[in-house]
Structure formats: structure tokens, C-alpha cells
Length: 329
Image 1 (cartoon, rainbow, N blue to C red):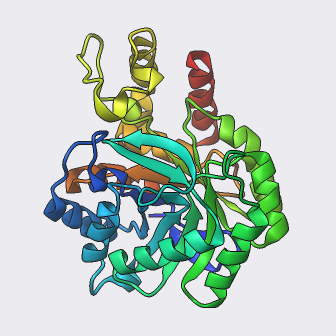
Image 2 (image 1 turned 120 degrees about the vertical axis):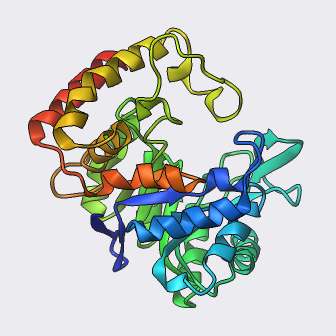
């Protein structure tokens, strides 16, 4: 498993991380087996995955609770990432979404983040978080200056409650406001070989300011795993329902695309998931690695995910995969 630095924080983590959204369980993912989730987290570490990402909003606290149980007696073995800036327990903030009858609101005001951070520390059963990420950014309906948010984060870092600062789902203007206010170590954005827009916006900025780019949904909710064949039925409920690549007009193209890449799997002795993961990790260029975050809630899934973390593609293979994907997307 390759390792990488997280921004300028001095923290080193595995290139592939495990995402714990599905572990929280909700209508997107369905119920989870907590015991299996804990086995998954432990198996990830055995395979060299040290980066573990969760958030309060994943299952309304349940994902953090499960992660906290998994880390008992093993806290030092993991680089733990969680988030703040979303509340569902009060009515103050701008609506992000409503799911399962619960309204989730954006609120990145310092006093709200202070409360959230303490709750996360309790659920995670730890006294520090390695990487604390603002999950979604403020909007005009409930404005919060990023300088105010960063002021709180820098204070929490000075107090030893967090070790590094991150932000997710942000604009270029947001990015510039963060780096103007203090050291930003990581941004977490949706990115895949099929959806490269966030890289176009941020790769150069990340290189300029020493910020790690972390990709979530690199497999597009599983469509890039290569498991779908022509005519296969797809359950469009839950997490897949808003992914355009599963729609009838796109899925045959994706099946054809992954079929083109099968010879590369043979060449590298890897699975399609490994191949796509390795491409994503290399997407920023030879001088930087993209941190690749892949969700898992079974040991088998994390075993599949880990293989791409030690794989390096030849330049011509990287380029040919990109050319193929450009023709589809």
C-alpha cells in the first residue's frame, strides 16, 4: 500500500482510504451489520489502509459510533477523518437535504462547530481527530464567513483536538478564502475518471498551496467495478438512483468501456476496481498522489478496494484509459 502526506500537516496516510458512509445505514444504503462493519475496519488496517473517513451525518451519528467501537485499543493505528458543518438536531441553518424524515442543515458557525466537534469526539471515543473537514459550505440563506470557520478550526488545532484541516464540496472562491485564512491541508471532492471537473478546478490550486486532493465516489457507486455485463438488471433504488451512469442510455457505454480495459487487468494482474483506483490516484500527475476514498462495509469489499493502493500504471496505459473515458463522458 502506497503512503502519502496529507497537505503540510506532517500526517502520513495510505493512498486508499475507507469511507464509512454506508456503515451508518440509511435509506440510501439500507441497514448495516455493525459487527461486520467493525471487522471491515479492522481488515482494512491489516491490508495497509490507515485512512478512515466518517461524518456525523452518516446515519445521524451511527457511523461515528461504529467507528468509535472499532477503534477501541487501536486508535493509533488509524488516521481518523470526520466532518462538521451539518446539523439535524436543531432548526438553525440552510437546508441541504431531507432524508428519512429528517432535515439536514448547513451550519458552519464557530459555536455550532464547537458543539459538533465535542459530540464527534464522544461518539468516536477519542480525544483527538486527525483530519477535521467542513462537510458542506455555507450558502447565502445562512451565510458564514470562511474566516470565522477557519478561526474556530485553527483554535481547535492549537488545543490539540484536531491535527489537520479540510473542506469538502467547495467552490474555487471557497478554496481561496480558506487558504487566505490559514493552512488548509485537504479538500474532499467528487472525482472519477468519468467526472473529472473537480480536478480541472482544483489540481493546480492544490499543487500551488500544498493541499491534498481527496477523491470520493471514484467508482461512481460501483458502476466502474466491471461487474455489470450487457443486459444485466440494475437495482436503481437507494445509492444508485441519482447516478446517471446507471441510466439505460449510459450503462451500455460503461459496460463497453470497462470491457476495453479488461486486457489491462490481465496485464497488471488486478481487478477492474484496482485498475480504476490506481488511475485515480495518479490523476494529478507524477509529483502528487490523489487520496482515493472508497466506501466499504464488508471485509470482502475492502479486500477488493485495497489492491489498487499498491499499483502503478504505465504512462501510456493511463493515457489510453483517459482517452477511452473522454469518449464516453
